[in-house]
Length: 465
Image (cartoon, rainbow, N blue to C red; front, side):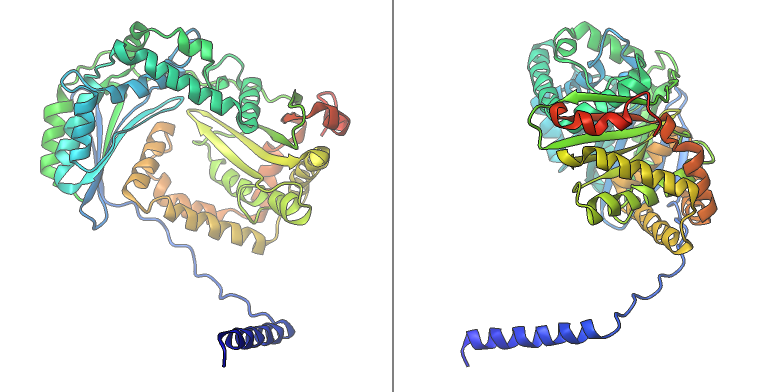
């Protein structure tokens, strides 16, 4: 028999099997077991004399350890006339310390098999290294040097600024970014949360004096937290933390607290993008903050409505109608602030129809509770996802860092799965009606006005949703 004959024969058998299966009853997958509570690995948290907090977590079996220094400071602390300073500072931290130039700092990282990661957000700046266990104490020393004694070389400022301007240009070329910029500005106005990105002008006017002033005022142990997770010598790590970071002078103010007062507005804002084959939609409003008792029920509600692949909005406008490929909703949390938003890139001719379906799904969930089976599938999804989010050293630190920075409490992680699975269909309906009110939603659309203006007329700011 030839190879072609074998292939044809195999195909015939496969088709026969498929036909037989199609004619019979499809076997349902086995019922999943009850969700297991997540057990936070044993950890120790203490505070140094200068106010610096330390959390040590023995985790995993691999001979590796992740070390992070987190500071509760970011773009919220820049001031109105200094947009971009926090982000630019994060880039300059990689340019060396008082003892090490940029090349020597890179060599020190590489000698431990790692690369320094620096991320700066609205309310937090994170420095992190992931190294072999034997280098745990050295990683602490290096991060301490970067946080306490950054070089911040003026000679590199213009280059770093040029790089930042290019990054911003790439970001604002994306309609999704532009939509989010407009959405945030409508919700938060002049509050720092209302500025998603600094402008090119903002970046270009930053001086090294402003960078150094920002560091002096905000890089303080009173606003710092060291996290160590993995396999490591606890005594050695504790000793080096005390010897290095214990000497950090507690200068500067305590954490600034400037919670925003977001303004839920029934607004339609359209930005013209001539010739665009798609419209980018963002629709949402402020909701209960992360520390609220309603926060976890809202997460479950979001996952069922639009925050998972099997969610209602996704099934509607992606699977059934084909208006879009990747719609998604989320509850976005910051310090004492949260909002819910659905985002989607939809085919231009379906812009109005997509909005109609999104709002329709919100209204349907507010008027009729989901079935127990539908809700259970979402709860299983969130429970499994939560375990995955805690399945590595860096991920676990990320979770602990979020709990600390948002003030969620010590029991949040270990009680999360139980609280997710305690949500009832009636609670989901209540959360939708209480928080996701279309009459208070901001709608931002980036698209070709010549083609979508008529479609959007029913969603104008003076029209009820």
